[in-house]
Image (cartoon, rainbow, N blue to C red; front, top):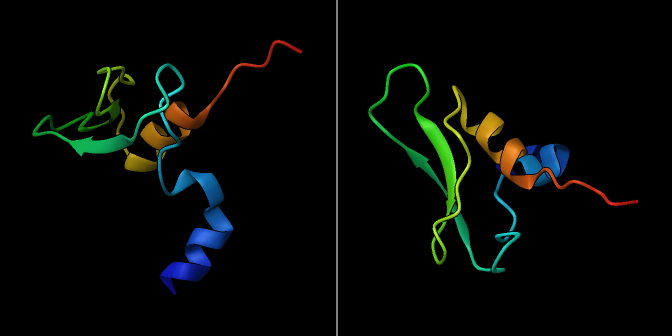
Amino acid sequence: MFDELTKFLGNMTRPDKCPHCGETALIKKTKHKRFPYYVYCTNCGCRTTRWTTAAGAIMAWNRRNSND
């Protein structure tokens, strides 16, 4: 079941590498009641704003602006 969900959701299930330094990024859940989730880089400390869902934080982190 989890494998099928991962295939369906694709990059929404885990954060991409940091866009600034290329290191690992992790999802963090805080005690904040309304916006407990954010994604942060384990190396340089870059992070998203807080989100109501883990999926929202991951999608925000994985979003890349294109210069095309």
